[in-house]
Amino acid sequence: MGFWKNLFSSSDSTPSSQMMEEYEGYTPEGNDSTSPAARKPISSGRVFFSTERDIDLYELEELCNAVGWSRRPLRKVKKAIQYSFLVVSMWQMRGSQRRLIGFARATSDHAFNATLWDVVVHPDFQSKGLGKALMKFIIKKLRSDDISNITLFADPQVVDFYRNLGFVPDPEGIKGMFWYPD
Amino acid sequence: MGFWKNLFSSSDSTPSSQMMEEYEGYTPEGNDSTSPAARKPISSGRVFFSTERDIDLYELEELCNAVGWSRRPLRKVKKAIQYSFLVVSMWQMRGSQRRLIGFARATSDHAFNATLWDVVVHPDFQSKGLGKALMKFIIKKLRSDDISNITLFADPQVVDFYRNLGFVPDPEGIKGMFWYPD
Image (cartoon, rainbow over the protein chains, first blue to last red):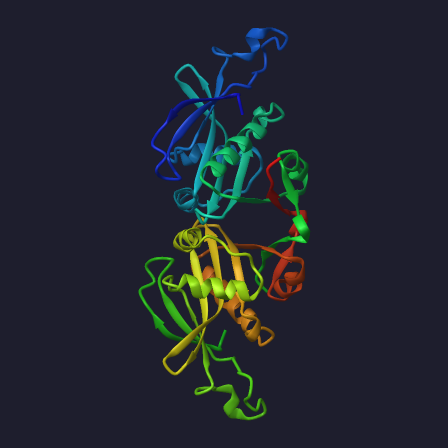
């Protein structure tokens, strides 16, 4: 985890303590990837993670829309963010401007289990290692909060993505199940 | 859901509002099941559900121990109960005495998703429809709280039990996944 750099971390007394970290592995397009300078992009944009919850819901809706998710009532999205154990957003920063490029949140009992929901990376920023970086940030945060069981429900096309991060499907035959009304 | 009888229900202003309901479908052993009186057992014990959280942790540990679950730190169990969205306990009442015979809890974002954990029925009370009744109580409660997505992770031997209640394994190929450290 040597590529993380703490920029700001408030008191860790609550699980939801706000923090912001820069992801130093990001190489934006347009840079010469063979140049050492490409590894430290500045003017062309840097990527940050945040656990702050005051996210513009319209910006989040736009992000979810970009990956084809159906719209949800903002009132419920607001409540879900409020009552999630952990909310992580990923931002591209260019000068004083920031753009929401990724998001994920987790429900939890604050003791044993956490379940991830709404993991999303904007299509323009996919296949650059940012989804992996987002997930590693989340896992690190949950582990630091002493959560031992991190779970999720993966769509078929992202099972391998999560498998590469250490997630195991149906461990010991355990089945993820969803309830549907009769 | 005609077999439910509200005995006590406090204000429903919070999702965690306490309530207690009697399960009228319970027929304890020793009664003549062909007798009409067997359907309204009184002296031989009645079964109640409660959403109160002030559960004796040692009694809960005993229940979990009876089904072979490994012991967990009571400090963490207490925290998990505190931060669960819904906690349901099932009690056998005999006169003024009550015995904890079942338990389940759910984490949630209070908006879209709930995930069930620690669903347990004491072996002495299994195969009497009580697990089903417990689950129906939970589903009814979560639906009344406007939770649309009820999920769980089922051990292989209870997949059919949940399937009979309307839970679908791997719907549309969605995989339940657990994270394990490298």
